[in-house]
Each structure stands twice: as structure tokens, then as C-alpha cells.
Length: 309
Image (cartoon, rainbow, N blue to C red):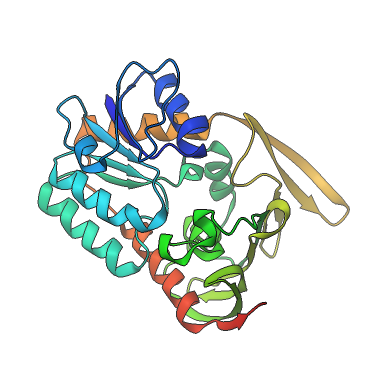
């Protein structure tokens, strides 16, 4: 499969281009406004993203642009008859995701939102351990520090903020473990310079699932997921960016009762699965992406808004 990669930020440069190549595929075009590319890159570098997706030497598009361009360039790729693997968030709102789902159906093209975590074996194992008939409590923490005012994550015009950047992972966990219909939501968002630097709250779902989450762009780097039922508790110490080897701790009254280890590169697995779906002619299903976008909209609409100096 020949890929056009749109954007040459850290995720594309250090993670996804190597993952595409390690999976046996080729990057033939890099679309970047800066004109940057690896020193050893033998393909073409173009500054116009539309030129990149319309290239004849491209079979599929991977989009790693600022958030506000995801919807536009995914739509352009579909018109150009190119399947799309797009970084989250697929759209800034549920309405944008809905429009992309309609476009994918119209053009009969595959669209994936790049939740790489769905390809990691630790999450498949965890889901197999949970009895969906039991109430589930989920706690998600995801923090990092970014105070650079010029960074796209700190700019409202580029779709910045903790909710869209990392809050979506908390919502993904709830969906992955069975949440479907949102029943209630409470919390707050701290804003600085027009973007939420912290979003914290709780969501209750009709499936007896409760999600507590705290995501921040102004704290020391940290991530953790805790999942509890009436009988067991699981702790995932590296839930979203695991190393090649990872672990889940099963907890009991006296502490850790079991350590379950996993191995695998979630980015390479995601690329493999995406390309297999293209070859198999799988029809786009953005129902999960749409639920997550709808819940994210609820957070933006309902949570208390606090302006920080």
C-alpha cells in the first residue's frame, strides 16, 4: 500500500512513518507546509495537502495535521477515492463526524479514526475479563505539560485543548468497555487563552458504566486507567502509550494478585488492520467515533467553564 502522509509533526515523523514502513508499506508522498521530510526519503514532498491526496502514486492517506484540518482533508481524500486513516479527533464536533460518515458511504471509501489503542492486545484481554452485566467504574487520568502558547494544542483556532487532544481517550475506554447511551454528565473545564487546559468530570451511562476522568495539559506527564467491578479491579499503568512490553495488574484485597504481560506495537498493528480492511473491502463504520464525538460535545456544552489567568 502506498501512503500519503499529511503533516510532519512528531507523531508522523517518529511513530507512524516508521510503523507504515515496518508493516511492509510505502510512504510515497509527504504533505507538509514546511517542506520537511526524512533525509533518506525517496518520495515526493508537497506543500499543498490537496495535491498530496490527489496524487496518482498514492493508495491511502494518513492524516496527522492540526485538529481543525482533519475533517476537511478526510473529506478531500474521500473525494479523491483514497481510504483514510485520520488521527483523532476525526472531527471537532459530532456533526463533522456525521458528515464524514455520509461521505464515506457515498464514495464507498474506508475511514478509520486512528485510535491505535484499539489494536493493542492489553485492551482486548481486559474486555474479555469483564462481565458486561456487572456495574463498571472506570477512572482515567492522562496528563502532560505544554505551556507553549504557539503550539497547536494551545490554540483555539487549530482545535486545541485537553478535551479534544486526550479527553477522547477517556471516552474511548468507556465505549470500548460497553458504554453506549449517555445518561448524565457533570464536571468542569479550566480554560486559558481560549482552550481547556484541564477537563475533569463524571459521565454515567445506561449500561451501568460510570466514567471518572481528569485530563490536563498543565501537569507532569502521567497516565493510568483503573477499572473496577464488584469482584475485581484492574490497573493499566501505561494505557495509551505502552512500550513494546506492557502489563495489567489485577488487584485483590491484599494488593496485586496477578500480573498479565503483553507485547506488541499498537501502531504497526493498527496499520496492518487498516490495510487488511481496505483489501477486504470493509465498509466504513464510524459509530464508535460518533458516540465519542457526541459525548465530547456534551462535555463542552454542559461542564462548568472556569477561566484561569
